[in-house]
Length: 272
Figure 1 (cartoon, rainbow, N blue to C red):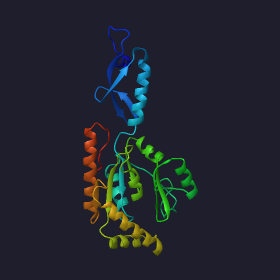
Figure 2 (figure 1 turned 90 degrees about the vertical axis):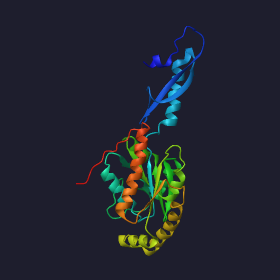
Figure 3 (figure 1 turned 45 degrees about the vertical axis):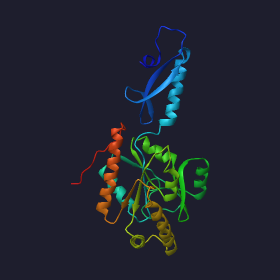
Figure 4 (figure 1 turned 120 degrees about the horizontal axis):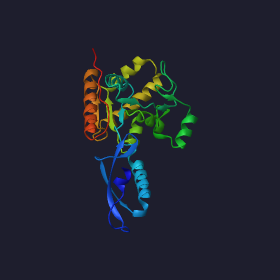
């Protein structure tokens, strides 16, 4: 079947010919299929298989990352990102996979290594950055954060939408990435005053660290609400409304991707 799609069967025995191959992407594999992307390739009679191998290699390198677009969610600490994501994962348990970031900060009570974050030393983080293991990195409140290539790939290998909860500096690094082409969501708190109330209620911050977070939050809100920096801004004044806005945006986007032939599950779990 492969040769039937590739070989130009003509009466001329020495002339070169051109055929049209059609490729589709299924997860991380490029396959021949009848409905896909037309790709014209000149095939020399004596080098059919060599050209075919090069075609597969070229397309694989360019298209291997295609699939459900990653979801990047960003917002100040205390904006409600974690609560919104928990609701999203609960309603669509088969759709999303969380990308576990690396950080040099210490774990908070109840946080588990490898679940909430990969908690590493500054030396380990710097070494991994130098090796090119990260898609994006940032320094926030004196601590280093980053999303590793492996963390994203682990989710992609499961056939799920990879969710990245990252800081503004990380968003700036990947927002125009051809490799990721992410959906960008900014979660905006009601006000700085409400944000401060929520952070104080955690009782996990010193006064100094709290003020650093609030100063950073002001800059994040300024960037996050500027037109064109994010695909959607979710205003979290009311949790139910904020979740409805987030959910509707994501479902609409994923349904569009399904219409483009991208395989992504939208099976829901309804609350009783």
